[in-house]
Length: 290
Image (cartoon, rainbow, N blue to C red; front, top):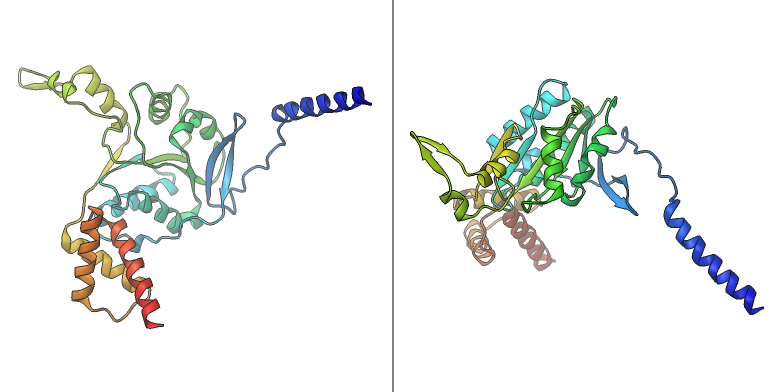
């Protein structure tokens, strides 16, 4: 009896190991009815994970970035019409609407066939496999890389560089990359690298380290810069969100003073902090009224 028990235990261990090699086949993505996906890897195998409740934000909700919105909308419309369009790098201060702008584009144009694929930095090495999936599809796919930053020898950095412009195989015309970052060149920059720059006959010749960092960001056809808001812009965004959240009667003086205190405590006059303050303000006053 003990021999049989020992055999069964060993058989169970063997079956558990085999299950890791023979994973159940996943269903193909429902590109027609689902608008947003995440690329996820399990046991070394990648798959598209459907996002059934994407972030609901409209283009009109993004205040103070009209020029950036205009350029993104124009480029995305060109893309959806299968006209020449560019990959976009949105870089700048935190909380200024970079990621929200891309999500708002999905909500605006998903009915025209726009699809959003979120890919984490460490999974960018899978970009060739991801892009190959979209050949011969009627939808238009934006690969969304949020909050990008790399170290010099990062393998995913080289994969993104190749996918943007440098691979032998051409990317299909229904794929673009929209990336956000707090850094313009996506890599850390050091003082020593600038001191190695030379001025020859009036021309600036960057050191090799600087050239390498510039070479990635310049492969994005469009750079969009996002800057911190001034006080008036910040208060205008606060007012917009408070009204959007359903609060009609507002004591402007008291509200603005509280909003500025909120920004001071957080060290940021950003769209994100304005939205967070508005939620706090409206929620607290709703409780007080009840």
